[in-house]
Image (tube, helix red, strand yellow):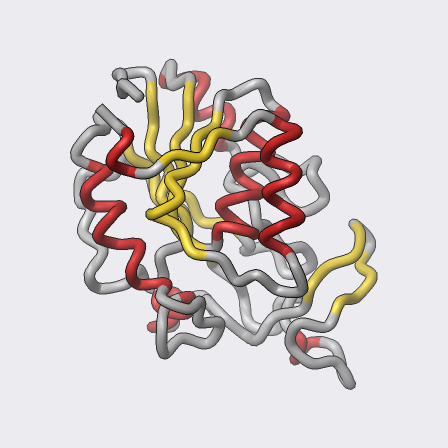
Length: 208
């Protein structure tokens, strides 16, 4: 697939807490970095997202007495998974992985900073209504197609791709640049949604 100046590479949440040794470690999460670096050479425009939670965030199991990580709970905006405390603002776990080197990135978009609501997607909070501002940024910059990679494939990467499609933006996920949590079949569920929404899956070597 040929990359143009209207394309943008969105690198999602490649942070210490999502990599081996982190608070919410994804198996082989750090292995996405090589593919991301290879793909980044093709793009004029790159955006990084960063999970950025305050202490006591409502998505943390620790904020709900009697609950444990990976339980589900009903919140005002729907049913959501509870997580270990992770990517807390100002902590080492919230920092980008030290091997990630994309100094040419034009924007760092922080998400999940509202205490009462999580934000998997780079486009919307988990109420699917409150925008992060990314769609407006892309529109004003004349960026028309998004390529995504990072962590996790079945949550923040996938939700971002689905929201892009909901906004009418073509979305492509680089499969070798992403890794999944696969909590209770979450990978299979989101891939069914990809097929329905028209999210494309490619490998980084498919880029030209």
